[in-house]
Image (cartoon, rainbow, N blue to C red; front, side, top):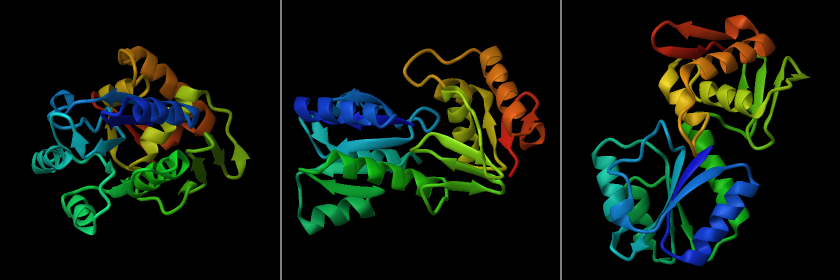
Amino acid sequence: MHILLIEDDLDLGRALQAALKVDGLTSEWLRRARDAPRVPDATVFDCVLLDLSLPDGNGFELLARWRGEGGTVPVIVITARSAVEDRLAGLDGGADDFVIKPFATAELISRIRAVLRRSARQASEVWTLGPLSIAPRRHQATLAGSALELSPREFRLLLELAREPGAVVAKGVLAQRLEPLGEPLDFAAVEVHVSNLRRKIGATRVHTVRGVGYMLTP
């Protein structure tokens, strides 16, 4: 999972990036509103951690712009503002959660995972799709109760396809999400990982939509 962190505090930013890395989450860190994307790309980021008090702007303004332009990436506001009015403004303005500083990083990471579960329409930490079960935090998957031996990229590929079973995920999106901190994989590498995943979970469970991408069939 790849996180966009927008936070101007150097110590907090470094600590958050380190905590996310320990928990297996990759991240990109920005410190200014002007450096933020016009709208966070849902094919790149799974969640945004947004500070409200930035040196060159207001996090509320960024959030309003993103939602006004159709941005769908989940946003968790992180702020020292504790007034009820600020929390309501954030949630009513399109934030998916609101965390008050100071906070425990373990709690923040749990909130990130909860937001991602909701966006994937899963009710618990273990995602269930017929006989296939996926535990994102433990990086484990089982098929009919038997553990699957998946490489890190095969597991990430399965997780990306499982976010919306029955929907086609473009090959270009998968190429980016399998290498979030570098150049997207070439399509031949994506095809190799899909082939390996099919071999392990069953060929009929990953359907190719020619010229578009792949779809997980529950």
